[in-house]
Amino acid sequence: MAESPDPHVNDVSRRRFLRTVSAGVLSAGMTAWIASLESCNNPTTSPGRETATGQKVTLTLANEPTLQSVGGFVRRTFGGNNGGYPVLVVRTGSSGSGAFRTMSTVCTHAGCLIDNPAGGQCLCECHGSVFGATAGNFSTNLGGPAPGPLQTFSTTFDGATITISM
Image 1 (cartoon, rainbow, N blue to C red):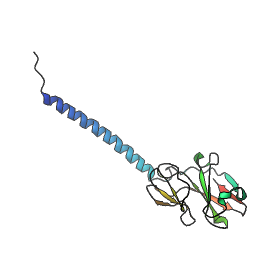
Image 2 (tube, helix red, strand yellow; image 1 turned 90 degrees about the vertical axis):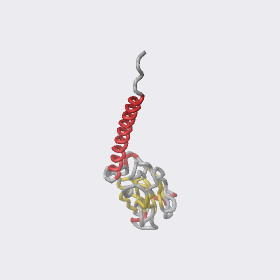
Image 3 (spheres, rainbow, N blue to C red; image 1 turned 120 degrees about the vertical axis):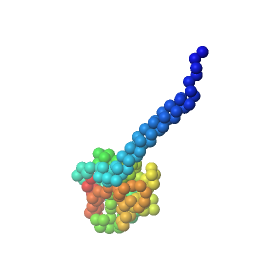
């Protein structure tokens, strides 16, 4: 009859195996986490910093009932502009060229889409970033993990039409 092996030899091997596997999983997880933080720290490569196309789009104010009063907004996608994601056009004033502003709906943290404005703010429900939607704080990161403001687009108003340079 063969002698049984020392029971502690298998325990040591099992422990060593588990330590090695755990260290490898931890190392891979840390590497992925650090890489995700690095992308958050560079707003030019972060989500929400799409390349501008230079295209101009026009909205006729008379055709946009939600833009008739300050605080009103429309959420629109204009072809491939803003990476094919919607933008928010918000009425931030009563008259003049600054009466309307436009911002991307893509959060600069992880690329989730922000909610529509409510109470002068837009929330990204993915991780809790909050962005301003009024004249004084438009697109500004008011709180949360987003590394910067939302991308904005040049917006002009001539009394009848709103022109957005995408």
